[in-house]
Length: 240
Image (cartoon, rainbow, N blue to C red; front, side):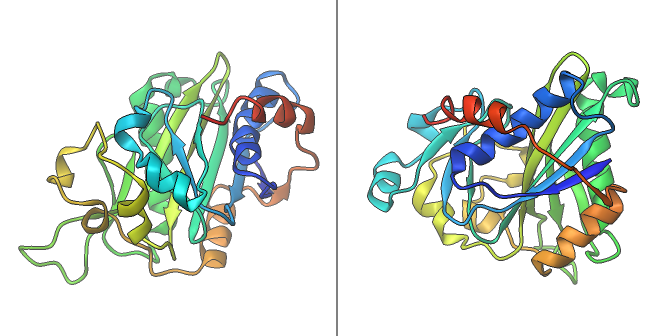
């Protein structure tokens, strides 16, 4: 696997690059899988493929704050990205991983790999819901409940799939309450908690996360080029 540490100039371009890497792998232009790491310098709301913008986004607040609202090609719920939220994308092939054609197995494969990568640094990490990573407050008590620090989404094509999501480490959690609405699909373990009671930041620095991911995915080699024209074409479609 190769890695790409690259943040482009706009949220639309950054979303497009994840999808373009999947398309390039599907076209045989990238072989062996890719791990991409990026972080938006500005806040942006990103809807899942079927998310309801009028329910899951506080559009007046976003317009007032100048926060763009975009839609990605993968499923999952609405997220808020920005400073302090490391974005992680992996592109894997079904030739190497034929058992991952089942959606639940694809989710489990990536999430369990991520949990294993961070377990030495994060006691209490586990997989929760369909596509979340959580951490149990330490020390545990009867009243403590797991808090989410990573939400993820999946896009499947004929021979490859894209798995991408968030890692919160120094994010302004108050902005979730300000800019997002009510999630239409909530995992049972959330227990109707508010955004700020449900999510948390990891007690790690950005470079610790990046180094652990590159090593954990065995992605030490750098992707020599990325699909610029595909990004330009896809970015035009990404604004909601």
